[in-house]
Length: 364
Ligand SMILES: Nc1ncnc2c1ncn2[C@@H]1O[C@H](COP(=O)(O)OP(=O)(O)O)[C@@H](O)[C@H]1O
Ligand SMILES: [Mg+2]
Image (cartoon, rainbow, N blue to C red; front, side, top):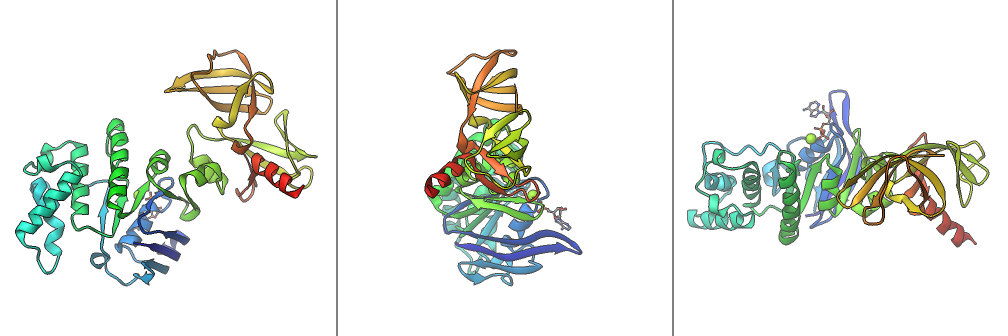
């Protein structure tokens, strides 16, 4: 199902929770709505579900305005973080529950068959006789998912579906849920504050902040071409380095260092925020110098903290290449596609250093 938000706003009394939200979700998309706590993610989901009403603007499903269509007629399911199974009903009864509102009634035998099939899909078919209290957190979450899927909805809405699970389980459920979504092809919208979850599961990410939309794009778009400084800082771990720079001739003066530009961004003295991704710091035999103030390995990568002429920088370096020790001095350079230039007042990104080169080439 295709979904559109057209100038959608939500106010509670005088406070505006959502401000002029516009986006399109295509049929079959797995979309993550990503942003910090309180930015309006759940509110957006509740509007889609028809549980809340828009204060203004339109929501369209398959090109039809649904503002006045009640929740039960929207052909969707919602799975919440607190997946609240009915404690006195068995797993089977929990899964069957949504069917009781379908008219005309589905014959019992057919309903059982549907429950069995959906339980197999999420791998709880061996637990149908159990009570929710006899299940682990992960199993409960799967049952909640089965309950959401039994009606074969055209739209699946998930609000922080994995937040209650421990780290290992969350990791495996991420992969499973992604696989299941691809297999079923149901348009899915998942709310999350976890950027890694959004980036690894969704094919489209909607980044929100303070009730406004910051960027809509593929995971690659939001990581490599963040529209704003907020997006650049929210996505990626460890976070992008943000340094204050000032334009001087064809360079940016940052701390005591200078980063060469391919063309000036404006007048001399213009303030620019420079964002350098930790993965954009390349260790080599020449270039700038940095003194290691912290070094540790996570998985297959070194996390370094460097004191440099530009200021302090976090760097990520593949672990197999090198050994590092605190106090050592090393050489590094920047990879230009990971150096972004932002307007300090609006937070909008001008371009990356790599894009500057491209444009300079085109102009020549
Ligand atoms: N029923 C409500 N009445 C008043 N304010 C609300 C209500 N629901 C949410 N809000 C406010 O709207 C803002 C966004 O909430 P929410 O969408 O739940 O954020 P998120 O899911 O991104 O954490 C918050 O500031 C919250 O306090
Ligand atoms: Mg929420």
